[in-house]
Amino acid sequence: MLKELAEYIVKAIVDYPDQVQINELESARSTVLELRVAPEDIGHVIGKNGRMINSIRTILSGAAAKIGKRASLELVD
Image (cartoon, rainbow, N blue to C red; front, side, top):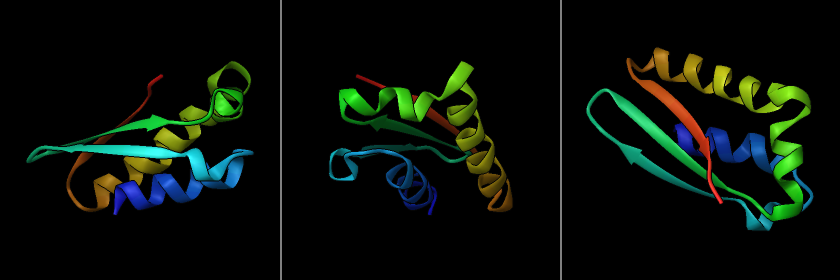
């Protein structure tokens, strides 16, 4: 559920949605999402002063809280 939500949000803001890859690492209480995008799209995902990625993290945290988990989003190269 969290992976699909993150994928939907990120694909809407990048120029190359076909290159969006999300790896989900799940444990009993938390989920870590590793996000990979095209090099040209890193700036779109981070946003000015990190506002865009922080907004995405806030949305994911709220969705994770509804199912009793914690979520974090990491942008990896």
